[in-house]
Image 1 (spheres, rainbow, N blue to C red):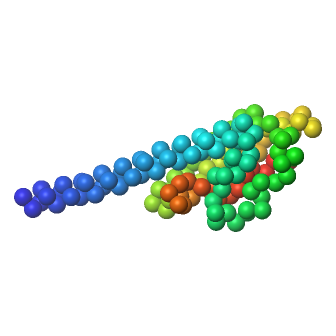
Image 2 (image 1 turned 180 degrees about the vertical axis):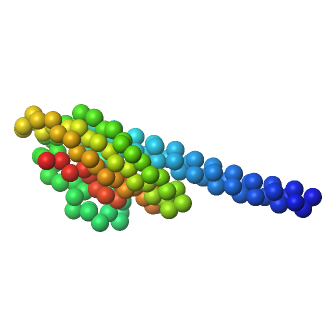
Image 3 (image 1 turned 90 degrees about the horizontal axis):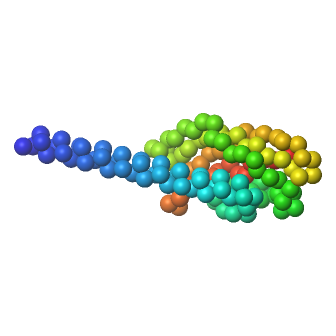
Length: 132
């Protein structure tokens, strides 16, 4: 009887951990989909709202608005993702294809993102992508 109860306790413990991991993973997908939409619709002020309060590159958070009005996103594709739910951190590389309306030349930037879980939400700690 004791072994059975111990087994059930262990099963419940790991089951809860798995549910928490699943919840955090689903929240991450929702937040990053919203971030991608903000960039795709050239809503850079909205995209900057996803920045971490601890962002060491805050000065890059929202550069010149006039410059950003010239940037048009063509595609946003996640190339790789490493989730470390235990550390509440996700690293991913996103390939962003875009053009500047001044030059009409298609460019690609690999945006190396680090997302952290703070204040009950996923936040981007690496700032907005660097467009030329």
